Length: 425
Image (cartoon, rainbow, N blue to C red; front, side):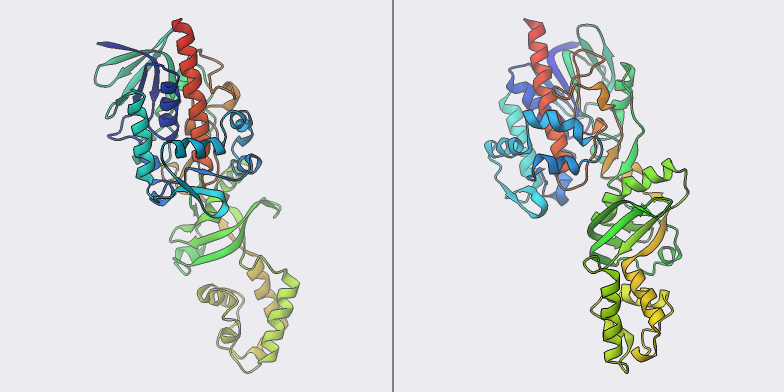
């Protein structure tokens, strides 16, 4: 049996929900398909279950936080911006509040309230919804396309919006299906890689779990090139794990580790950790030296106990062959200088990241060179639109990826409907 629509949106994540709403608002006959049992699964777990719906930083700052082709979004932001996202949700009855670094959350602190509001809006617009509906194939024809379902049903539409996500967080339904359909019409899929993902290491201190579970706050973490120069640095928190390192600073560095391994064909990349980024090395050395000299009979550990978290302090003292219980007056200036250097620049080797399925975000995807930046329309196939994480756009965590998904979803859905309705006339 064949059913006919103006627009079919495939994928019920943030971009798909927004696309279906935008298409419905144009008065189109819209179908939203998702293979999972409920819509908005990725949205429901975002922001630790509180749903970081967008970020209130100025557009230029948001673009800076989307290192993967963020500049492609300048046109889209001029049409539908992060401020428009805030108004959109408030019009749906979702009051938002601003937290640190511009992150916007619902006042309820419940992601499900956001998902429920979006689904209610879809129902108000009479958008047809099919869940538990995996797509078998898309047949792209000249004037209309057919979406063939695994249950044998087929749906025809003038416009198709592919919003199925990337390959990260697969339990929410993002398993990379859309790349096959995009390739079918001739789209380029750039190399896929994990980003916003924990980093792995085989260093002895990692394998021996010496620092496992230790969190460091407001450190500066850098990824170094083969000449020892920083490719990127992030001042945030981090945590040592049984397989390597994780936490906000690590997630932001992860894509640069992946790219460095590939670019220079390396087995390992060096990272540098500055645990006291607000002090320069020489003044810090003088401070530490003076403290130790002023109380020569006290143990090194007791004098320096406020300098760093205890486990990390003991680890660095041991690394520099300093007995923590030794009297301060017995430690040479040379050893103190060496210790301070590692406080400011502890280098360690990393060998990769956890797999893409464990990443928060997929790097790579449908090449943005083949997509119209103001409409999200395919430059290759008329009536085909892309939005969200299937595109080769990726940002840091903090509301940037979801902003990209909602903005591209809005434009894809609106323009898909406008195109379908113009053809119908």
